[in-house]
Image (cartoon, rainbow, N blue to C red; front, side):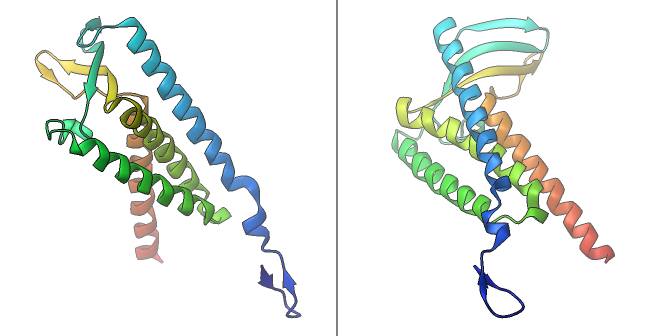
Length: 176
């Protein structure tokens, strides 16, 4: 609620505008795509299996108990709950930020939708299995980029767009 020019209380139309919530549909679609592709991989491949598709690309079924680049994967089990708590906290933070967006910040809605969908996809795997299923492997000869999944891709794209927006905002402020 806000006060209009006569001092009376009026609804804040920006807060009531449902446009910002459309990004929750993006997050839900990414979550479903991530879980669907992981389900296919788990049912089609045995753990550790690799199917070479192109000289630089393979389908695999690997489990990652750690974070990005298998960070803390061999930490003994405590990292599962650490990453679950971190993931829940981060999802709550992103949802809160999404609820506070103004129409002028609509590109941040895309960022938050991508990040929330990716975070939920990996969070679900950690809660249910204790690990995340990774299945996309990009490599060159014996140089292997860590395997990833749809959730990781969404997170990466969200962060990349966020960085671009911060740089653009910084340049605009400097030029103003």
